[in-house]
Length: 449
Image 1 (tube, rainbow, N blue to C red):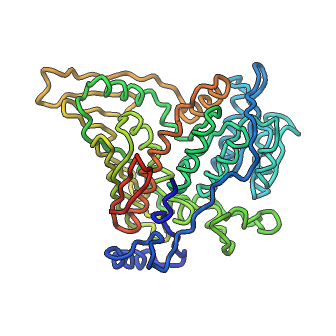
Image 2 (cartoon, one colour):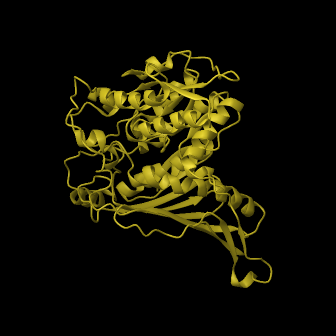
Image 3 (cartoon, rainbow, N blue to C red):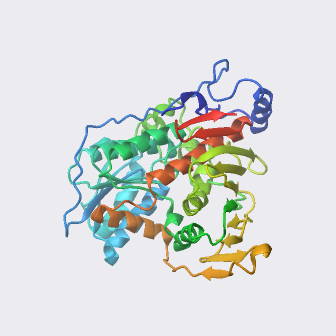
């Protein structure tokens, strides 16, 4: 199911943003920028075959704590460490973090301190090599919070090793990796797999899905959503550079780069990788997945089959990825979703779904339905009240733990995440080369049009 020909290629970091866009436009009528024969730039595929031995799933017994490990306790990973240890302290879950793995010793030690301040000294081990975690029989579950280019490999290895997995969003960096991971998840149905798109847990999207199925808005024609914020100092620049980092001493830079190396040490790339196209899809994968995922779930319109997107460098000219993006995503059933993302203006689109009989508004905690003028005598306006669940990210984390106990599928599952990755990957391709892309759900292949 791998589509090597259409995987995005890597761009030299030193190239000017505007010169790159000019070059892209000149090439758009000829060979693509994604490794097509005849171009000087060839895609570098990230290998995602298992690198561990097959392990047997061993869920925790009744009354036994869920022993979990964290791969990549950087910013988000350490946030997860705070959350899970708080669950244990508050009695919301019987869980314990027994190990963390990070190629940066300082990050691992920081996370270890956070954990042991709550769990007790000597309760959490550290390692640079995540394989050491996967070999342990006492680890039931693994949370993957590494950079995007490592998500697929870490998740695949953990699943094959017999662990339940929570994988941070976006599920993978590229579509071919997503399909590799999808196959492993489907081949191991006894594993619990959750993707960290927390808005999936919000009741309003569950209510929206039920209302659409009941025909309350008629045929869902098109929808819109966005994730916009304004970061004057440059998005993701708030991740600070630690002068103590020393590759070869307390940090394994080559291991961090993985298949995307070797390359010279660059602390900005290391800690602000979301700004660079080699390592991240930027706004699309890091921000827009939060909005697209629950909307795709609510709509239930099948796979994305055609994606066209564009992006610009308007304010943050130093960022390699774009500071504003616009996506047009068409689904199997004909529904079209418009998605906007920005890091230079915080006013987004109203989150809503348009039907031929009524419109559905999802900008608040509730799900509101208002009839189209032609159907005011047939469709009642209504607001479907939705429960306040508090912190949605905590609720998604708790859902994962509950599913580890019950062996019921997690709510943010592989099918939904795979559909989201089609939209993310094809939009990224479209932005960089100016072409639209189609996806065939039968062959699971993407094609430039």
